[in-house]
Structure formats: C-alpha cells, structure tokens
Length: 208
Image (cartoon, rainbow, N blue to C red; front, side, top):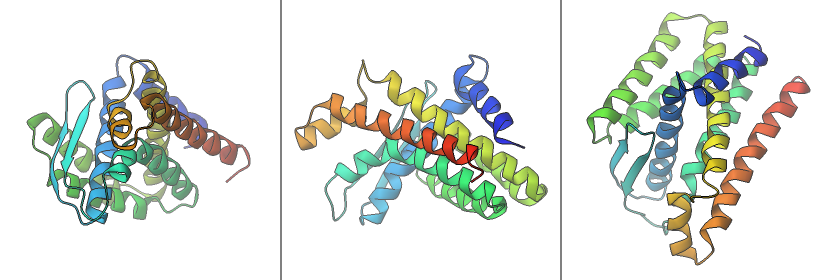
C-alpha cells in the first residue's frame, strides 16, 4: 500500500460521518495510553482509563515522582508521535515488530480500563492487531501500520484544531498547574500535531 491510499483510508476514518467514530476511538485510546505511560514511567499508579461513546476519555493516575505537567501534556502529544513513528517503521519494512509493540501496549491499557464501552473498544483493537501480527504477511502488516499512522496524525490535527475555540480539557488542567493560558497550551498541541503531519508529508515526498 502506498501513502496515497493510506491517507485516503485515514481521511475516511477521521473525517467522514460513516467511519469517523472508528478513527476517533483509535486516537482516544492512544491519547489515554500516553497519559498512563508517563504516569507509569514516573513511578505513578494508573487507577482507571475510560473511553466513552462520544470519543472522549479520561485517565486517573497518581503523579509518582514528578508533578502532573508531563502526564497532562502526554495525551495530545502521544498520538502524533506514535503516528509518525508508525509510518517510519512501516517504510522500514518492520511492520510486524511495530504491531507487536502496539499490541503489548493495548494489553497494558486493557488492564486499566474501567468502563464496558472502553473495554469493548480496546478488545476489538487488540483482536485486530493480533490477527495482523499472526495471520498476515509483511506487506499487509505494513499497510495496517501505515493506515494507523495516518489515522493518528490526521485525527490529532482534527481534535486539536477543533479544540482551539472551545478549549481542551488537558489544556485547562495544564493552565491550572502552570498558570499559562489554556489557549497557549491548546495552540501548542495543534502546532505539534500539524508539524507531525508536515514531517510525514515531507518524508513521504522525499522517499523516507
């Protein structure tokens, strides 16, 4: 699968009403996983993860050895970072290894999910990745990874840019902790997401 097809599929998953909820929940799971990962790395404890019908989510965790700034920042930064990394690995033809790592991450998220809908979403994603890892060939695995990568990138831009006016809950939390305006944090997240898409597009144009 070339990048053009992967982008077209990702647009369908993030921008069209028929499939938008699928892309939304993929981005939300990675978003909440980012919060949980940073909490765990800072010796914190993840108490619960929730993924809701409307595409929102929440992670409740202790902050461990550090304050909550890094944990709050991780949510909106993780999907574009994972998306860009997924594309890089797919072009390096290491799709199977990357999908295995993502599957392991989903299993860890699954252990902390505390609502039925979220449990169903993570189980379906895990089942899909398990099948891709164990029952498909290399080119198919790389195609799956490319679609996931572009879905996370484009979904991140959609979520952060659309949040510039109403604000983002993580940005409001960061504003409370740092004293900086929530709009500044929201703009930062939007610029980071757009920069990741630009980087992916530039690398695609130059052949990675």
